[in-house]
Amino acid sequence: MPAFDRGPTDQFAALLAQVPDPPDKAAFWFDWGPVFYRGRLDGSARVLIVASDPGPTERVAGRSLVGNAGQRVQGFLGKLGLTRSYVCLNAWAYAVHPGQALAMKGRLADPEQARWRNAVYDRATDASLEAVVAMGFMAREAVRQWTGRPDVPLEEVPHPSSHDETALLDAWRAAVIRLRAVVTPDDDGDNTGPAYGTAFQESDYAPVPRRDLPFGAPDFLGDDAWVRARPGDAQNSVTRPRPDDGHTLMWKAPG
Image (cartoon, rainbow, N blue to C red; front, side, top):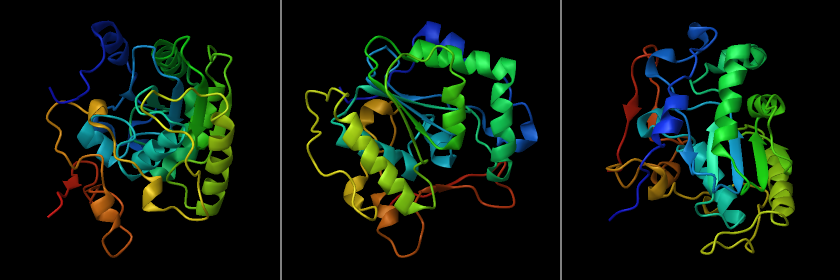
């Protein structure tokens, strides 16, 4: 039987289905709906990754952190020796328009938003949790508002899509070194390899495992190495074309 994600339990799905609408629908790609998680929801996660909001690849996959940024995160987890014992969530379940990000950071504290988000964070973690990693300013704010956060190490680092590559790599390198001292690798993982150099290399990426994706996902979903190898600055196989980015996605398969 091929590996695939069977989805949340009925109880967890009921909680996710209670996701509140965004506080300002015009600030989000609202019509595409929410994207909730990637990874383990059964309490076995040793690391919780919190990022900002889903992108276009995440909408296609129905899972968080699957595109170029997610493949960087998967490489980060691999450097900790984690192949499966993690869960990836976001500050927002709906995709935020970049120009509205700072304004929406302030709306994370809206009572309805905070109650639901904290309930999801609580439900997704258990005694197995060994560390939390908040990636980007939106994630840092969401984690700071998590009233039930377990007493485990917290790393606050730049978002994987940060345009300041030097600052990103410096922070991720230091975080990996610290986290290796507290995070237990999976049996089939290796946390003894190199951390990060002075520029992102293809070896710093990792494909999203099949066990994290729904049944029937094409083999190339979650592995955009073929996009990054092409001339130009494209990084994702899924994009939002303008001016109809609110209702159109473009998804390219490797040819």
